[in-house]
Picture 1 (cartoon, helix red, strand yellow):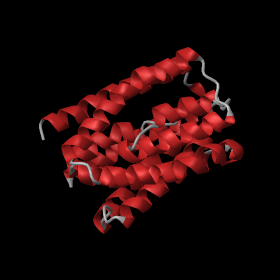
Picture 2 (tube, rainbow, N blue to C red):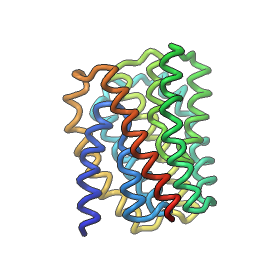
Picture 3 (cartoon, rainbow, N blue to C red):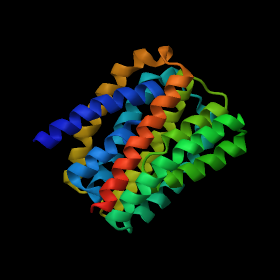
Length: 242
């Protein structure tokens, strides 16, 4: 019960962060789920919760969704995410922790590289990025720090960016959860756990919406890098002490 309470408290905070910066719920919450339930249980639980939190973000910014950019990104991303999820199922727990931790840490220079280059995404580049990030999402769960800059490079900003990225992530995570269910990796117990965790994320998401317009790009970058560094280090620690 204490473990559940701690997960829910962190979930509300993580949902508020994702509601402000467009990503971060999985980065913050996944290490907590790994320590509480183990890596094989944490990933499907977080996938179910991610469906719920991205649904909440999409609803909160419904009028801002850019449907053309959503289609260009999500159509190739959906099958790629299913393929990534199928790949993940066959991996051992310690390797899952290592991949997640290394990927989170690697996203810090990756995100900064995209920012420095001032990259502007065309339609075909948006589709290619969707396929790549969709596959990575299937394996490592959280790629928001990559997808957010991609949508920003396509010309979206603040509400439109949050809404379109959330809607795209919603479809991707539905594909991932469906794959877990098809191959027997999503038990009824983990589905319930994911729904409980997702409820706390949704609450935090709506609570954080009012802060979106007040946060500067510099503050966003620092917050995102801090989350990535802490979560990546925590997951690598879990892998080494497994």
